[in-house]
Amino acid sequence: MAKNTGIAAALVAALFLAACAEQIRMHGFVPSDDDLDAVVVGRDTQLTVRTILGPPGTTGLEAETGWYYVRSTYRDFAYQTPEEIDREVVAVSFDDRGVVENVERFGIEDGQVIALSRRVTDDNTRGVGFLRQLFGNLGRVTADTLFRR
Image (cartoon, rainbow, N blue to C red; front, top):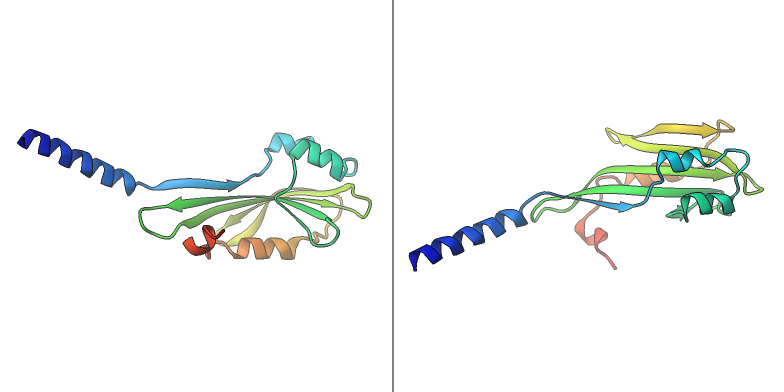
């Protein structure tokens, strides 16, 4: 009887420790560098980009002048609120005719938005305000907002 109690206690302890283990979750989708290399600035259109990269996670507010692919990485640990530890955004901008104007990959370093790679036809990135808002929410995610339906 004592042997079975010891085994049961060991199993309960193992389950308890497993429940407290850190879990890393990823949400969203960001195209690979190979997929992005297939998009040609100045030639490809919204239709060809959708074929190559798939539909965007979100779009710009002005007549879909920008498409955004977003991936966030969250750390869950025991009973604590999930913590967003990384976010990456690929922004594809289009001109008035729907032709690709810019392809940029953004990451976050020490709370600051940084460009990881950029292929542009002009220096003016129209979606910077949107990206600042998107990255500005890093760390402000709570369990309530994360699991809201």
